[in-house]
Image 1 (tube, rainbow, N blue to C red):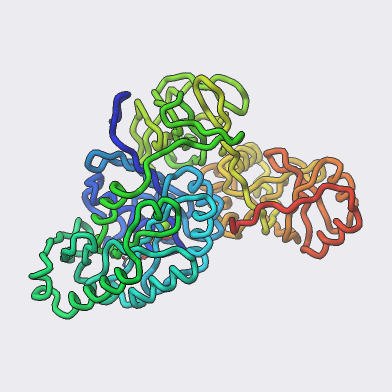
Image 2 (tube, rainbow, N blue to C red; image 1 turned 30 degrees about the vertical axis):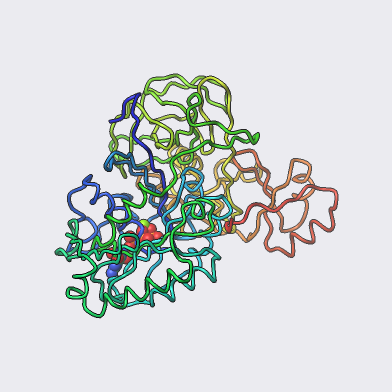
Length: 524
Ligand SMILES: Nc1nc2c(ncn2[C@@H]2O[C@H](COP(=O)(O)OP(=O)(O)OP(=O)(O)O)[C@@H](O)[C@H]2O)c(=O)[nH]1
Ligand SMILES: [Mg+2]
């Protein structure tokens, strides 16, 4: 593992996209290429999909979707790679957005057959807004889909990012022979392996021989390459880092085609960790004293040891296990005795970590999402926003004899941000209100409460669709308005719940003096 003098460069990125484009499959393929796993059997197994290394949760495996983000750290060549696989479903977008606050770049997957989908567009906007450079991977090229040039057009028109393909497919979608490496001019010829469970052998073929190997497909690839050249579609590092262009690669994550190229490109072009902006606008340089912030809390990864992991991204300095740091929010010292490197649900003890690394702090119950820890000069990183919930349920323990477990479970779901938890004197602690961006969050809570806390819950839908921020004074006024209820979120925020936006308009109009503000929408 890493040592204090570890000079190896870091690459820290998130894999993002619309649901089902192949993020978890690609994540596994990258691990396979880096030789951290020897077989991708989990996904490609004959018995059907059983989950990738990053989809470890029971519900993820049962449904074949990602519900929670998963971090993977591995070595590749002389680099340390920190990758976070994110869920694509918009119901879990809060989780994805938390991850985007902790990475230096993003790999965006586009399904070759589907092109740009709604969640892809949203995520591109978020990356643009936050200045996160994006590498685009056109995935599933093994299956019939859209035309490569059409896809490039779509990216440019709909997102306003100039695509600069680094590889170009040899063979239409559905007939994937390999790629033309646009910078070397060579043909990288892929060979299928059984079920795509192992690294796909690839052969580098010179341009002269390419035609004999790939026939017309090679000529067509060359044509495409030249068209791109004339159109200014060549990579420019400065433009990429400035978020004006996106390098594009073609791949089949399932068959492990084009995955080696992506790893090489990430090492070569993706930005290394750099200074992190603090909440006061100052920058903490990477070689400053140690600092990190928590972007995710997760428990339930190990049924035998019911523990809770706080994922912190190191922003500056050197983290050394056992060091005592300051917890920004409470001002209390925090001992980092139990620190781990994570690989999906597996962990190893980490002794040292550098900027860009993601460290799992075990049973650090004081740490919440958005918290800063540091050594020496104080720093406070910006809080991580939670989105406007649009779905509300009141929850109670199905078996009142399990109330203690119920309370503990709800507390845990709250800390992880699986849902937002709202309370009021009126409803009491027995029946908190769960607020969600999307309804699937409730299913996760229900399943986890039962499996991890043995506390089955009963949920009752509440007739609210909108929450707005208010304050104590506002709560006193609004609680008297028919159909409106004000509750307190665990971070202290007062949320006024309305049945619909008209009722919110009316309440604001009738009470012009009270504080009433929209919450950030899940769009950005
Ligand atoms: N044909 C083909 N199928 C693929 C490829 N990559 C992924 N798939 C399949 O697409 C489905 C979705 O793959 P995942 O990797 O779970 O997709 P995801 O983007 O992680 O999905 P969410 O996390 O739920 O958003 C699975 O059935 C994969 O086997 C590919 O390159 N080619
Ligand atoms: Mg996934």
